[in-house]
Length: 349
Ligand SMILES: [Zn+2]
Image 1: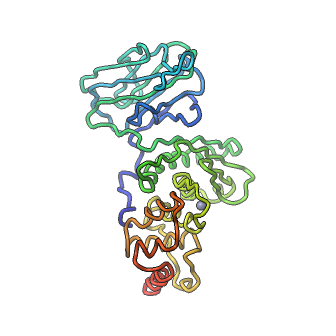
Image 2: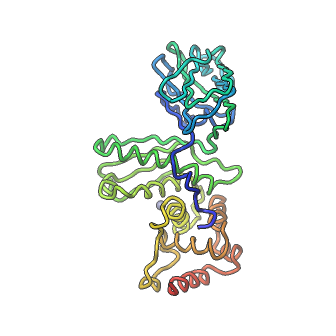
Image 3: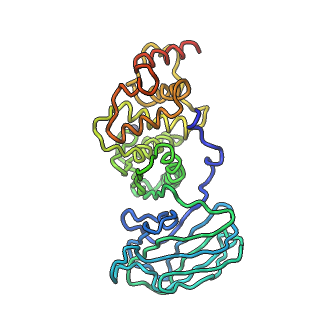
């Protein structure tokens, strides 16, 4: 659907992945170490030890000219909370398996000139036990082609402890959310708005229903997903609520759900799964039906009237400024007229 269509390459794996043995402190998630900003940083929830690793891997190897890793909090907090890596090395790998040392950390900084070497992964390795939580401000990578920094850093913290038999399925759902969140954030994002960067994704054994979201906490009923293992899209829908993050209580529920389901069905799901309204149901549908009906209505509006309509509605919801009159403002027609036209278009099919 117009602008919402996602290029096929975005459906593949993420271009850059960070893996670490270090637990994250609060919202100081690992991708903040590679977001192009020196003010934001990854912070570990404990002091690093010589067994720990912090690895950045690119999907396709890049030729690295220079790399610089800066540790220590940008606010220059006093010891013992400076977050500087006290002793460690920077390593590089052509294949993500075998690493060699390319620099030593001095005063918390490691710099290496790699002369265009092909690199698949870079790894920060402490060489002795630290005394303070580690802060990694930025991995500054000068390469050809450039490795894209995380514009929308996201880390999903999975708790599937109640359903160990579903561990692999739950891990996959975490990966899907981490892969799709930046795409959805790009679509529903705007200047000056930073979506949450940490999602807690919990599977509950005894929860009835499918899933629910409060702020950045997604809770899923394990029973539903055990019975519907192809329904990753339901978790994507919840992750869209995290991107929406509307603080206003004045937004109608059908609109909030309609936007979430529009993005889910028309961006994430493949075309053959797009919602279709059966002709014998047309007389009974309402735009307030939410979910697939409202999503299909929005998809039609996007094609017939305004490719940015959903983005504009999202913006209004985020500001708490939604009013039904906006439909007239955006399309020249009121909501009831538009919905009648939509129904008419379904009857013609
Ligand atoms: Zn919902």
